Image (cartoon, rainbow, N blue to C red; front, top):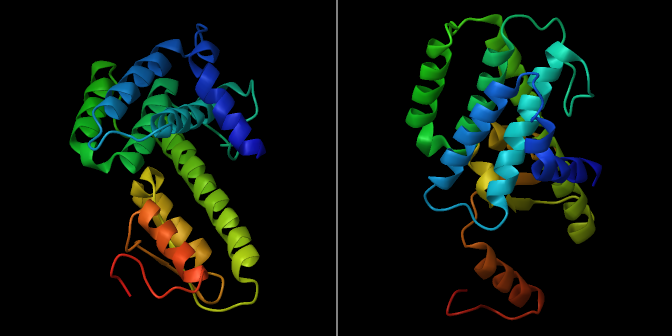
Length: 223
């Protein structure tokens, strides 16, 4: 719950936090780019998903900046010996999270990123790029860890003893291939777990499970 509160707080106040002069330009630039990407998502991001997308970008950006400034505690791991351009670090952290969550817009995101670095005289091998990559990878990995931990707790509560359990995933967060693969790896470390694509939508799946638990044979003609 602590992590959830921290991310929610960042989503609400992120723009205020980054309004100061230090590293303000790349942060506000990539805030605007992120909002553009979220707004162009097809299908549109449901419910509060867009807020979580924005929060995840800002968490990674925060950690990239703090690798240089050391003013605030990072949300993920400390990135040691940061060097190069803070601007490159911010742009790369935001770009990598956006690519993970909006793969369908990869061409736009990459073209925007390349043009952004080029317009500021920054090479793609600037050391700051690697700082941004580390920040984004760590935040996406932390999200997968949190989801896997929650899955393990629910599995134990619902099923108790070990046995075969299909863990079906749903939601925009799993559009991130790196996050999904890490989630799959962590969940399947426990004997009997198998991560798979859901056969039904969330609402239909919940109804079918309720019927199954109630001892009935099927729903809507399905066995």
